[in-house]
Image (tube, rainbow, N blue to C red; front, side, top):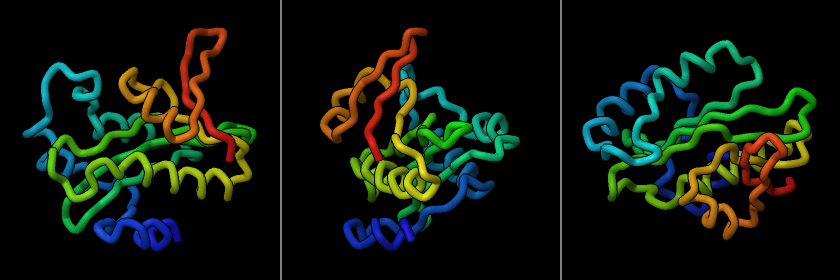
Length: 158
């Protein structure tokens, strides 16, 4: 349902799948050879992330496709009492001219809103946002929240 809804606006979007072995292989073959060094986001290891998350039953994982091209990856979860739905890790392809450039975040937001609503959550969150992304989230009606423990997240009601 999410694919059909988003594809009406973004016809280049051809698939929303789980992060499976094919997605990890495309991450290795398409993204890693062009991943820039030294960026705050360049050292994420998606194979390792999926291994760490594999036992989590309330996990949300999504690969975003345009044809055979892997354009984005996202991992998240709902809180235990389903108060919020959080995206914990999100990354778009580092290839400059991929077919869904600058559309990965809006896709993840749309799917996150739909998924969180279906679960009965009250808030969509992006945990530990990169500093450079905070203004982008704020332009998309998210507020930066700082907890008493020093954690940060960007939140928007569902």
